Image (cartoon, rainbow, N blue to C red; front, top):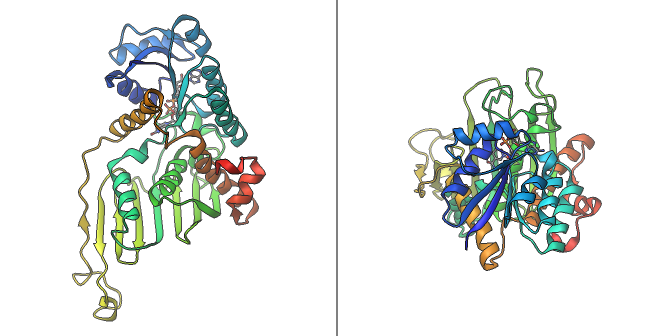
Amino acid sequence: MTIRIIQVGMGVRGEQWAQVIREDPRTENVAYVRNRVDLAKQTLKEWGEHDVPCYATLEEAFAHVKADAVVLVTPPEVHHEQTLTAFKHGCHVLCEKPLSEVLSESIDMVQKAEEYGLKLMVGHNFRYLSSSQMLRKLIKEQSYGEAGFGHFAYIRNRDGNRKDLNKYPLVMDQPMLLEQSVHHLDLMRYCYDQEVVSVQADTWRPSWSTYRDDCCVSALLEFENGFRANYLGTWTSGWNRFCFEWRTDCSEGVIIQKQQFEDLNGAKLTPGLALEGERFKVGEDVEPLHEISLAPCEAFVDDTRLMITEFLDAIEFGKPLITSGKDHLKTLGLTLACVEASKTGKKVIMKDFYQRQGIPESWI
Ligand SMILES: NC(=O)c1ccc[n+]([C@@H]2O[C@H](COP(=O)([O-])OP(=O)(O)OC[C@H]3O[C@@H](n4cnc5c(N)ncnc54)[C@H](O)[C@@H]3O)[C@@H](O)[C@H]2O)c1
């Protein structure tokens, strides 16, 4: 079965999507939609594609081509409207994250997917990286014992004016949280395989930031099993060296991911070692950190391939969607709970937050 796809949006992420759809033997890109058709045609040439028609709106595309699914790679503010248009035309939707910046719109998208009996998946491709799959496995199998706490740091000097970066985050509310931290919060939910029960958080804007709104996020998450994770994420820093570290301390060792998409390492805790030698151990007497072997994986491409496979299997064989719109509500909810915690200065209890936002209890 060939699944005919209309791709909406041809920006930075759109190029990666076009490649994945073009190369997947089960899909065919039947149309592109971009609000500027002249630019769409020009971009298509640059991508080496010539025969695919381009339209300015999704409605216009539906008037000319038949499709089974729509991939939305547009700015989040138009995801709601475009998803409903796709559903109206009987198409399944794979929408880039976040579903929407507004939780009520995202809830509506999930509700409409249920009403129409169509699939709604969200672009959390980083779940499908080899490093994420391995970390999830190690945590699940308790290879390093029981997980006690995590520390996730993402410190990047991302100048929003750079030519090859999307521009809408420059002026949107909470760009870091909604565009970037949403991935990190999702990864923690996914890899730790636990839901967050409460959130304490603060967000702010350093004076030299290129973003209008807050681009620093600090959060403390408490998970169902008592596990805590501390998160620091920023797009404005005082050094251009990108710093990524995701460390998980467990009862029998530690797992440290040193690079954004790879470089996973582990060390086994030696019982009794803390009773001997240096009080502050930094040298040879520390347990060695070993690299954990990972399957090769090109970020943004191979992970997206695995993600679309899940989407196609759900359409073709009725397999359950893991990275569904419904699941995303818990990640997006967490993201917006960070905003609430920052604004009120109070710890947010997620159960109460979901209730206040009108997310049905059966979805949580
Ligand atoms: N999952 C990931 O790894 C990842 C990475 C980057 C971006 N994203 C997400 O992808 C989405 C797009 O991001 P981007 O970086 O490609 O943005 P971008 O600004 O580079 O591209 C957006 C595209 O949408 C088009 N567009 C805008 N409004 C439109 C409309 N109303 N109708 C049709 N086309 C319209 C623009 O012309 C452009 O082609 C966002 O939701 C973003 O969060 C995901």
